[in-house]
Length: 109
Image (tube, rainbow, N blue to C red):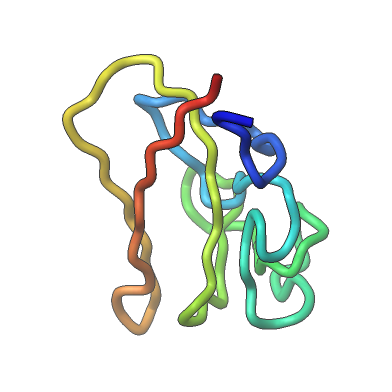
């Protein structure tokens, strides 16, 4: 089926331009929507997956994804409402750069 997705629908669809919250990765389970190399949610918050989510201490409140290890990843589906010439991602770790991002374009039917 042309345009079919392997993962399920987005947990909270992000509209772009805009902000994608790290904890709002797609549904679909391990190996489809995410890979987390440790069992259980070390932060114990928000979602019942192995992805480690904790409340944030930022002024805006909310949550963050923590305890990141090499080889772990998350999938996000978004609705783009306006053409843009660029995209950027930001990840922070107390020990230095924590992540790299890969953007893939997939069109739905």
